Amino acid sequence: MNDPRDLLRAYLRQRQELGEEELVLDRLSPSELHALLSNTPAPLAAAAAPAIDRSRPADRAPAAPPMDRVSEHAPAVERASAGLERVDAAPPPPFPGEPETHVRAGAPVPGTTDAPPSPRAPAAYVSAEEISSLPVLAQVREIALGCPRCGLANTRKHVVFGEGRETADVMVVGEAPGQEEDRSGRPFVGRAGKLLDLLLLSSGFSRDDVYICNVLKCRPPQNRNPQPDEVDACSPYLLRQVELVQPRVILAFGAFAAQTLLGTDITIGKLRGKTHKYRGVPLVPTYHPAACLRHPAWVRSVWEDLQRARDVLDAA
Ligand code: URA
Image (cartoon, rainbow, N blue to C red; front, side):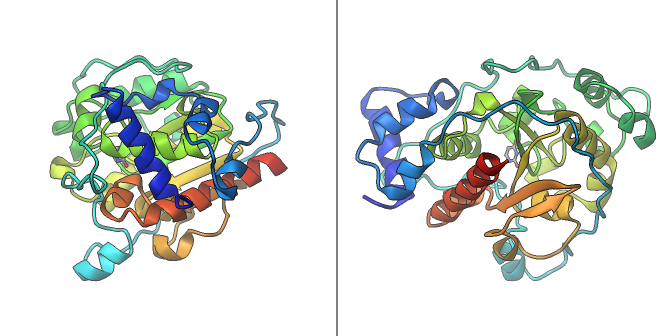
């Protein structure tokens, strides 16, 4: 068994045989996962990396990114191969022979200071300049929870600001909340989120140790693609999150996250496999976990990208 897909599948099957109907991977440490995946082949053995060093220099200064985006009018095939179809628009099939899995949406995340927010009516408009000068994440979040900056304010149930360790070395950036996230106010708690947790764990990253957010903080109706004006309106929050968390590495999951942060329309298939920079911070683009649920063969690529992120951290 030398394919990460087999290992991920074996893990999921084992949890099922243990009678678990809900997989709460937040609770599993990397070492527990590695024990489960005993007799790991070389690549996974390499994932048993030392814990992330949280002592960090204070000299990380970001610079402004362009916000160019990919045409949404490209042919469907081109868009799909570019990773531009909204990856969680419809429930993806499970891995062959695997059960449907889900999370306890709204379960507390160890190490996070973000409690699930209550729904709020849109509040007063706050400018990008004001957002960029807010000194702490709690204040940015407070403003975001009442955000009226785009039309999604009228359709969302919850603003999904982001959560996790506020001094994390690793920042995970996804696309936009889906249905589960909109319902719970937490990022990546649906099926894609469970796979994300598993991929992170299999590469030595615990969800407890990272900061997770999205390009958009509100769910686009029917999980349609984020619109350019929505990305522009929401970007000040993401920018400020990066500035305040000061990660050592950013993991950009999916085309929208990678292209928005890098200011490019290059496809995710071409962006991944290399380490880029966002305002001086190493950025590792990879496929979105929801895309992996549709294309299980991409799990290996994601896993390899996460190994590169590990290497970046270990070299820092
Ligand atoms: N997909 C994303 O990109 N983000 C989430 O939070 C959930 C699904």
